[in-house]
Amino acid sequence: MRPNHLAALVVLSIIWGSAFMLVKVGLEEIDPLTLVAGRLVFGCLTLTAILLITGRRLPLTRQAWLVFIALGLGNNVWPFILLTWGQDRIDSSLAAILTSSMTLSTAILAHFWINERLTPGQSLGIIVGFVGVFVLIGPDLGDITGSNAVGELSILLGVLGYSFGTVVARRYLQETDGVAAAVGQTFVASIIMVPLALAIDQPFDLDLPAKHAAAWLTLGIVASGLAYILYFWLVRNVTATQASIVGYLIPITAVILGALVLDERLGMNSFVGMALIITGVWIVNGGWRSLTNRRRETPTPMLGRVE
Image (cartoon, rainbow, N blue to C red; front, side, top):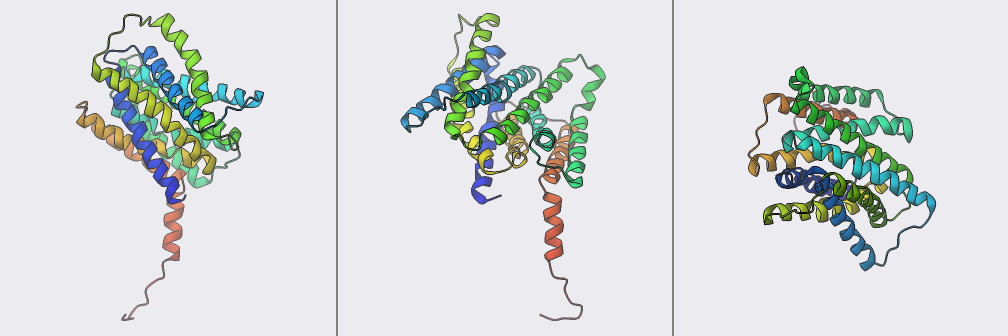
């Protein structure tokens, strides 16, 4: 992976890591479906403005719009609803740690769908990562109907949407401009979510304090708008599994902001689980193989030799 790809991953992880804190702040005053619908509309308007300013055009082919529909559902509607609903029940930092399992599920899906074959080492990494997920949520599984367990399982199901979206984008959007792809998917997601929010939440008398309005706008314009330009550029230039590395960088930002802004505190099992998930993702992305190769390339010092 080139330095510019790595830099893009870091920036993306900071943006999406802060989104967990912004969602938590927004949920203090805004119902989940309304929060999702608003962030998608704000994101779509931002992306459309960029599309028009830069002279780009949306593709008009049937295949392109079928992909946009799949991405709107997989990258936006599916995960946004489940992650937002889950965050209403658990801390933002815990939600972000669970989201880091995205790389593991993406690697499995990419193996079967787009022929990015898993090696035995990567399979081991997936096992290690999912052990970390179990350590993370294990204490809450005793009461599967409890608020924490339901919230955690909701996050994990939402993550599958991101994995689906990453693989679809990697397979079908290699020749599509990133801004156009981002507009297409957020437009589809917006026209699905707005009627849902109006029908279920009925936010007709919403009166927001400035802090919550600012969090909502930032969530939409930056995390659901500008970030997707970077995301689609990445999936065109790296593998689906490499693009999903952002999933284990996100918790670093989320945990720091959760502690500093929201006064959240994690238990020991959360840190152990996060360490196992990150280790598993590192192995899946070839970290162990790179380390082994580096050691093999290092010359063995000669005994008795003085430099």
